[in-house]
Image (cartoon, rainbow over all chains, first blue to last red; front, side, top):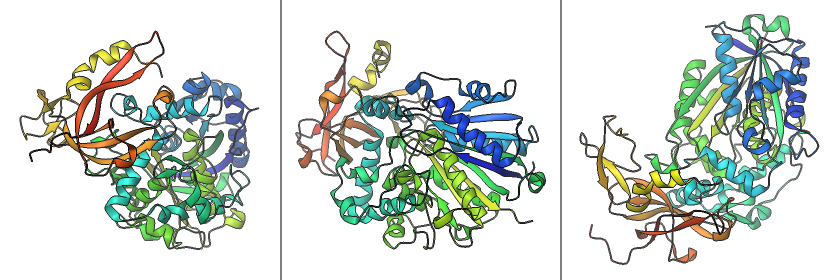
Length: 386
Length: 137
């Protein structure tokens, strides 16, 4: 095993890219990353994507991407783990270099979600849940999160409005990210008055359907300083799982997969939750943010909401989260999200996050959640000093 | 997404009768059947039919339904904690959304789940309604 570093990052703006196809989105992010890394060849390309076959009719993205990058012949695979597909692709790239089977790897996350109607996309996203025992009952992802949020409020006595700061913070951070989907501040009143999608989940609790692509270039850490002026080391890469269906979990309000993934990551990096300077969390829904904070050891059980209420998650707070807008405001192009989290973490660790720069950002954590939590992938990144 | 006839047919025992399993090693009741006990990890293949009685663990009413369920919106989905232990996901029926509460006793009924146009397959399965008779605990 050898240490792995990130030597280049790239991204497209997140949004509704009516004029851009999935191959061109992928190409744009990948070429930015290769240019940033100052290389033009890699040993392997891993593409994280969830729904290209279902939404655009185009599967087989590994081959497609290397074809359109004029890298034909290079090892290329598509990796799918629902909304955690991006981090899953990074995990595979990490393994390839750590195991010394590859030296330079491009990891790409891409998703094109706006080629189908909202209802169709909603139904396709639900494929990440249990098809026979959840989806067959008319459930959607919003509904699964609503079931969790209502029970959480019931057990711990929180009001819906107590969750407001998750969305407000994300939108405040998205304001200064040129690649974010939303550049729009929201107020506590706007949160309170937001239309309900599935009570208690309202429009401002849910991340948007959108298109986007993000990419990183990986290399052995021992060569990173030769290749890049500001490399970032992957200190930990860890996957945790739990039952696919919410109803099959012993305690639906504990993200056991996130707990396992975070604990494994802390152990690999030999750090504690208190050492983490910022957290790119998977705020696909407000309730997921709360459960992820708890499972990752940043809050006691039932108290994840407290971090939002007290402002701890703000840029100046104890644990800044979603520093470039998170899934809520940057957007959640599902298979690309895990790589956006990594690209944004690298910008923070390089000190290039502009008005959103977290002070003394040295150690960052990114957590990508698949489905309603069955797969959780955590990476810990560290700025590499000379 | 289009539903397949074979898919519905092979799940008929679960959809119409809540056929699960009981672990002969630790007594754990299992639904849906999975042939291995999630509690003690031993093989569990002995059929066991659940009573269909339980209570609402959580619920939500969807105003916007996914493709294939538009005609039924708004409808209420719930996590049901069955009396024998397992939890399942199902729609509630014969009850107004504002009358549903966490902890409400419910019982299984067979209802139409969805249709696929005039010529398509009609899928039946379990839904849950407020319990007509108080459960003997």
